[in-house]
Length: 97
Length: 404
Image 1 (cartoon, rainbow over the protein chains, first blue to last red):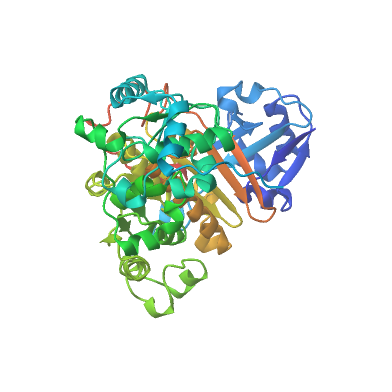
Image 2 (image 1 turned 30 degrees about the vertical axis):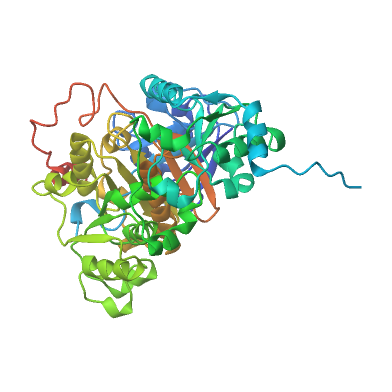
């Protein structure tokens, strides 16, 4: 059981929670498990080809999975998986004031 | 029961102290100094300790010397030289006070190895060796910055660095307001502020550098007025403009550190490109709701913004504070943490957040750190072999629009 930390922008899709426990032996399994339970998160995490979206970063125990084994990165019980999208602040991307 | 040691004259006291101490000629101390400089292992070299009064120190001191006036020796030496096993070479103007200080340190304060320099600073100068002088602080400045001057990591030298530094703030909004206020209070000598907006009532829930009387005024002018009233030492340079590809290089060139308080992705990517190209450190923060992120980008030493976020999210995954709200204290907290990073970079103390991303959750009051690495192979901005000088800036508005 890993703890997945949900960023603010995804919380509406997981009933407002900031942390969710998910089973899985790899990052791919954990995130797919999350998307299975909360389908609205799938499009935000995964591209159409099943790979992680480039604009979202995933960390297992504080280390980016891209410098580990990507979606194959191992997840042990008790590990923390952080989903981290970029935040800009005041104005939205396409409509900078 | 009291035991009285026989009364001695001051001269005898000093003579006895000197007889027990190892004495070094200024030539030997100078050699130690040069050696430490060329080896770059300043933290293992002996500490050179100046025990003279403040006014004497300000007329000139041995480069790198730690200053603890003899009158404050017992109360300040442990903070100034925490490692009691480290070798210390004490000096004063000739050799009396240094001998007494060295004796006190070894006999009563647990220091293992304190030597003295014969002839003191007087002989050092006569021999023509290098010395440094701090800038002349007015009595008012010494009072204003007294709490800084008391901290060994700041002191006269650190405060001088602050007064001589130039920091550029991108945005005088949620993040820029607290950062600017505290950097001004700290005595950063030049503060440039880039913001094209006017003060709005809805800003006042968090943008504390402005106030109700400034509604409708340009933010840079409002910020300038607040700062001038807080600290007249600070020169505020207002740039009432938006950062764009045409002005970014000229804007950032004259500054030492940049505070990223921007409110949109294209600006952040553009700033990153320009800062990496000009090798300017950027202290970056972003906020939403109850959550904040903070890191310090030092070009080529750690990752850049593009290493961290190679691609912007589509618009529906990039909510704005305007649409979704933000807890007022959150940019206050993150902006102050930004100011902390800036100050550490300027006074060269502590560990800035290079290669570390700090996440703050205000609701649970939790801090998390993630490791961020430079993508030397693939980053289009700071990757190996990327030549920024001969390429135009990318069209980031288009990049962001395409993401949506």
